[in-house]
Amino acid sequence: MAIDHSAFETYLNGREPEAYRFFGAHPSMEGTEAGYRFRVYAPMAKEIDLIGDFNGWKPVQMAKTDFRGLYELFVPQVQAGQKYKYHILGCDGFWKDKLDPFAFQDVLYPTNCSVVYDPSVVQIHDEAWTSKRDRCFDKPVSILEFHFGTFARKKDGSCYTYSEMADILIPYLQKMGYTHVETLPVTAYPNDASWGYQALGYYAVDERYGSPADFASFVEKLHAAGFGVILDFVPVHFAVDNFGLEKFDGSCVYEYANEHEFTQWGTKAFDLGKDPVRSFLISSLVYFGRTFHIDGFRLDAVSNIIYWEGNTQRGENAGAIEFAKRANAFVHSLLPGVMMIAEDSSAYGHVTKGMYSEGLGFDYKWDLGWMNDTLKYYSKDPIYRKYCHNQLTFSMAYFYSENFVLPFSHDEVVHMKGSILNKMWGNYDNKFANVRNLYAYMYAHPGKKLNFMGNDIGTFDEWREFKPIAFNVLSYPKHAGLQRLFSDLNQIYKSHPALYSGEYDPARFSWIMADNADQSVYVFRRESAEECLVFLFNMTPNFYWDYDVGVPYEGEYVEILNTDKAIYGGWNQYNPKPILTHGKGGLHNQKYKITLKVPSFGAIYLCYKKPTVSEERPYLSKDPRANFTEESH
Image 1 (cartoon, rainbow, N blue to C red):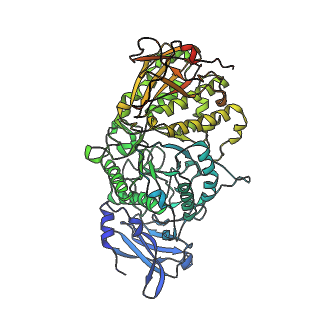
Image 2: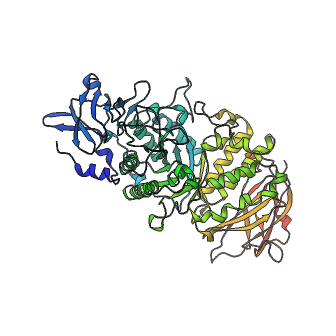
């Protein structure tokens, strides 16, 4: 059989985005016999044998068909579902049994085998979805990050399959108003405690929750229901298990061969400066995008791509940076509309700028600085918040340097960090009042939104990979109220263009009150062509009956959200009637002013609808108190 040397050549040059079509096990008709052809890359191997169900696990030597390390073998009568391994004599003189790096299915412990599987059988009927999707720059994006094994469990404690999980997840997403889900890694991984971040099979969907076809069913169901699917992808490191990529042919095929070999996680670091490694990982992204119609990839630990071991003092890793640029370029070229998202804790510039402006080419970057500053602020006693007032204003000083996602992810609720609710200051009532304020602030702030499962119901326990989310807390009013708030925030977010249209345009945002540290009150506005939204956040337990705020337009402001409403678990101190501008002169460098009721720890959204030319200006009351009715607790 003729070998496609051009594909192998391109793989070695680091520019082959479809290596999965060449390597691995593929059905083949050779002569009159049907079977599978196996191909593997192992440049320093002395010999490679194929062992599996189909030959009684007796080694059959593979032919070396290219001196640069290409081995292959055709085996007749092989059937899908049969198991196999590569039996490799490495350059170190030792024989090792290895998984196929390009296997489309793996069975890990206890057998640690690859499985023959033809991904061409996977079918997803979602043309209506994929034909319209884009990278959502001017659309609302509210992401629920979740873990397949712990979002929900069956009564017997076993896990739902991918397809079964879709049936559970979709009604929840519809109720809560999310636009996307982001799964923790589903590439095959051996260790439960790694949550998928120590992978081995970069083309194999993890078997814990089903087959590739089952995962395809998950994606198809979510797309049919109107939800995008984002995958967490780990390009920096891989698991050290000796049946995987580690010292694959006795040499460092995938990892560094020097002091950079190991990462701070005790895993092996991909040598992203090697061209074959670049092809290997880029092809994995393209495989998941094409086979499963994934809508976006969140790349983990991008700071460890940019800098050696994520340490700015060790300098930039030029080879890894080139990998990131190539990965983004190939995905954007071959998978139109698919988002590329960087989880990057560094201050490296232009992560989300194009390659031609010295950028990395990502579409979005997690704003981890915003996350850290915000959670630190909300954990402080309100008495001391005036001394760190700029922790909440600082984010807008750099926000327009990148396209940011605001994340409260799994990383914030693990390893003894406590849940988001438990990070809040105060007693039981104060914690809930603060967390309601926090999430209202998150949705008001420019940037796409991401929350880990359990955040939206206020779980007290931090997340663990063996314990399902405690949805039973919804039997308590405060938790049910927080869930209602989350649902309303998502609905407001999606229905008001000022919250997502042109959010990376600095002209759409301005501070009204940014320096009131003594009262710890913040006010800002966001605008679209149709409306102006004014947001007020009171970060103390102080209550204000008549609070004056400057506003940019004369007319009527309607309160569309107040976190102190009883339906959210608050004390019902809100502004039920439209609030009218009044008096002579403005306030806070605005032309006009309004007076409103501000509850303790309250967050308020006000909406001003811009009049059309034909609309008359509404009657304005001279008495601001005419806009209020007293509400009982």
